[in-house]
Length: 250
Image (tube, rainbow, N blue to C red; front, side, top):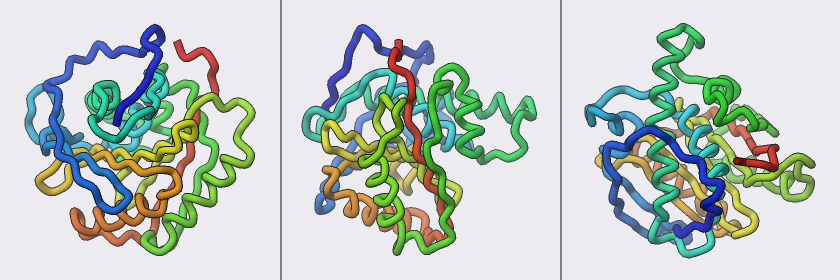
């Protein structure tokens, strides 16, 4: 997953990463997947490198979207090798998300450990202050049967009539079975990327990518992956569509 970016406007983080992870790749039909080690997941990736329960996935997803935007990541090459900027964006999203989440809960800012998307945007502070939630829909329906159609409906709407203030890719936070993952639609490169910061059995975080025309394949892969890793068959899920409205990202 090669990327292009404008180095002069790169957003940097002062957070020191514990290690830079390797990954294993595989191809599932139209979907190319990169699996990171268990230690590179939201419940393991910390300064102590010890397992700790993390419920910060919604906040992590929002911060990864912010890192993606501010680092001007463009998927201008093949999926592999995954660019350093993308991996660092995930790493800092996990580290910063867990730190902010712990602080907010300790201060009693939020009542529940699982944040809503608006709470996560608010909690992200300056990094997320220009994120706009364009659409949010809760579906009381079998996810395996309806995920692609509902996701594609709003993506089509976005393509046909995007917001006038939009200056970014379309970010979609998918919340199902109390886990949030991030989908990024990048029209200019005709690619869709799914980023999941959770542990998956013996693996950690995972990234999957398809061409835009193969979005249904990505949705099917995600459903099967959840079943294989968590035995999850959600009958309720949420889709939140986000974008950045600012023009000067520096």
